Length: 101
Image (cartoon, rainbow, N blue to C red; front, side, top):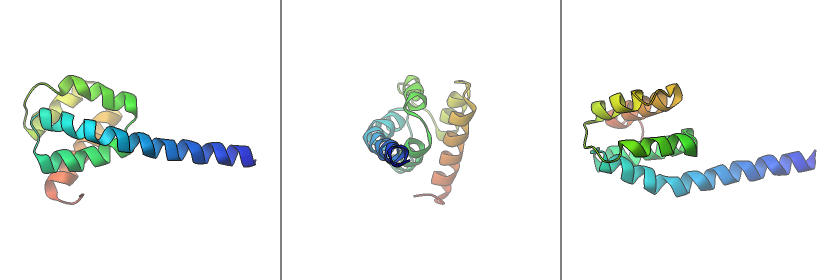
């Protein structure tokens, strides 16, 4: 029982470390895609907490084109990942309205 608890604690702390390491890269990718500094920072914070590393890596293909926020969400939709779309769209909505910081 103690080993299982320890493994869960290690996994949870490791996922937090990965999130912190991924944040600058995701923020930079969002900026490179044409999003504002404020929205990029806000969205990267939410997205690194809610998405897996493999999902975040899929967003890298969107990096080179400049887009509006709505165009970016539409591009994510074309990646055909429902969770990725949901987190991106809700992050965009919450960050744009200021309901998430």
